[in-house]
Length: 297
Image (tube, rainbow, N blue to C red; front, side, top):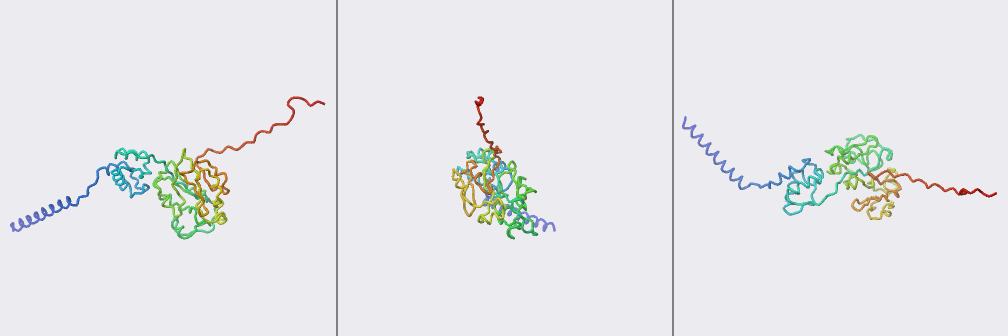
């Protein structure tokens, strides 16, 4: 009986030893080397995993940054959440310099508030923008504007976008916005766009994405772009183009002169963070009376 037990123990021990040797050889043969810098870069990144950088999470970006560093260039990679400060630390770790990137912010290109865009039907389905958009034009006659269900709000991890209860339109808190583009991807109608934050936070953009002809778009919304082209003709910098009855301002060319704003007949162009315009005062009319000398009788 004792011999049987000893034999069993010896057999099990031999099997375990053989398995251990096989596992050791396999681990060496099929080992995947990971550059230790990847973990170091990953620790520097904010860990939001928002995908705003274009990579699958912070780990994916860390891997791409290290590979880019081996090629000597990471200028085309940027973490919108960490911003320039974090990217500077990453560049220092990798022994590279990065080009300064201008901060971006999300803007909502729709002025179709309850005041400007009347409701024509009542939607009774699933209360999400994606579901409502799939069903048609939504509750208004504009098939391009904001649906107001808040898919963008749900997508934002930083509490930077909220639906204004009075207007029904989302508003972006530029101090909280990290330009991660989650809200951009969540909007089924593409009315949210990332634009340069601009000097002193000043921006000019067309708050409309309606591509219908002027009469049709104006019937749907009072402040719709009608593609008249007046802004395009007025811009001295070639920053404005009109395509498919819709005007668009290129933020890379725009010099914030606001000449386009004054000629827009529907007030579809939005300006942000500019000082209030002082009302023009008329010059006092000089009296055409005598200058101190009495009329002679």
